[in-house]
Amino acid sequence: MKLGIPRERREGERRVAATPDTVRQLTGMGLDVAVEAGAGNGAGHADAEYHNAGAAIVPELDISAVDILAHVRPLDPRVAACLKKGAVTVGLASPSSELPAVQALADNGVTSFALELVPRISRAQSMDALTSQALVAGYRCVLEAAIRLPRFFPLYMTAAGTIPPARVLVLGAGVAGLQAIGTAKRLGARVFANDIRPASADEVASMGGTFIRLDLETAEAAGGYARQLSSDAGTRQRQLLAPHVAQSDVLITTAAVPGRPAPLLVTREMVQGMRPGSVVVDLAAESGGNVEGSVPGRDIPIPTGDGTGHITLVGLKDAASAMASDASRLYAKNVANLLALMVRDGALVLDFDDEVVAGACLTHAGEVRHQPTAELLAARAAAAAGTPAAVARQEGAL
Image 1 (cartoon, rainbow, N blue to C red):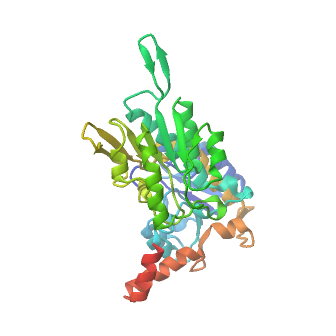
Image 2 (cartoon, one colour):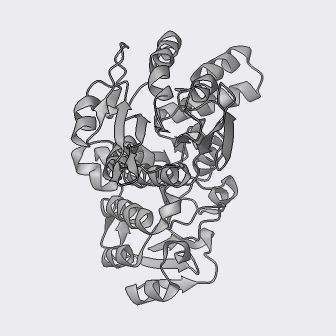
Image 3 (spheres, rainbow, N blue to C red):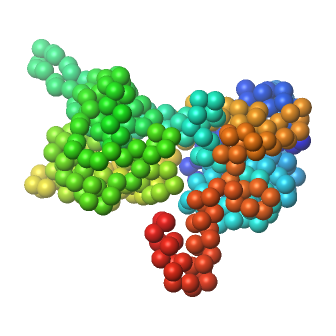
């Protein structure tokens, strides 16, 4: 069977779905691996490395000829339509926001596996791309903040005077948030954090941060993910966080709710209460943003409330891709480990009794197997037909 590794086309994307190391793993499964020329350049892997690892280098990957396609970014609907019926895809799919691509995959009879859907169980940890890429993003966002902050992170005691440590506040203590806490702590900052899941307090402490407890409802969903707070609770959360935001030199927001837009945690007014020169990094900017007014890929100066200076609001974009070498190293292993569950002696064996295979499957045999995505597509189709009740259901789902 032929496995194709394309060169990622999305602007700013430098990661690749296979490294020379994972090519050896994939060819060891009996797969014929074809790598598009230049696919690994952004991650520091030359075509010759892939060739030496056992892959064939092709000037342009023929999507219609591959049996398995491994990718990083969600596929374009036109690419999905070019795949042959029965082909298998493995990669990030962003099903809730890439509905046309999901529909194209189903219509074309493609079996697609979305790495976002890999169950959060011990056996699947080595396939969990959300975790591996969040690790990279959490590290990167602290570096982005440190570069922009016009002062040191650590405490310095010098003959010329003492420089106090920067105060860093991290909102969201998932994998990205915990990595941000640990990185900021290693740089010498005083680190504080908050999460709507009370169980996160011990994890924050283990990374050297101080957990900020707020009088709010518990909001933990299945698999350890956060769930969306009610409207009233969200307002109360922002009120309680405002003084902590104002005291911080750096604010990093990492909160995300799978399958939904990122929750609004910080208003413009809260940002304006910070000191001049402070930096806000919104890691969730690409999924709607935790901070009001953040724009992916842009630094926006926000004037302070008293007009004496400005705060820099950073809408982080392609955070994991900015560290493409290690991000690709981890991501490629996620892809190869998932494929190892489905390939036997060079042939695909899809065992849907396996909870990892079944859980990660997005489309198969012309159907959308992931129920929440199927419901969104049904609501979208009904809305296009102009059914008022369906329009209301779609708005509620989104």
